[in-house]
Length: 115
Image 1: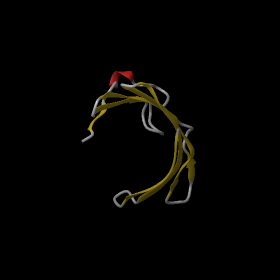
Image 2 (image 1 turned 120 degrees about the vertical axis):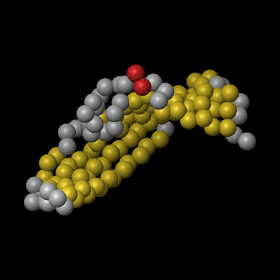
Image 3 (image 1 turned 90 degrees about the vertical axis):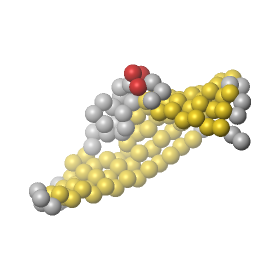
């Protein structure tokens, strides 16, 4: 079982258009990882944006729409060699939230070798 909470604060300043935008988000993640067999580890996680808003230079505040992100991953164990892969939907706050993009299956891949 793993958890994560992340507070992000970004400030965008455009001198040409004389605009300034501050965006703040608080994202919480809960996930679980378990050995399915001696050669396969499965994991999944869900993230939810708990707080999200943007504020412009005039102080006007706009709340972000609710967003959830789900992801699933697996590790294939070949002795000392491990192959990790993940599928998931877009990042929290993206245009396609809630859509699992299986067409990008295994696009996030890592290979580990344990000496």
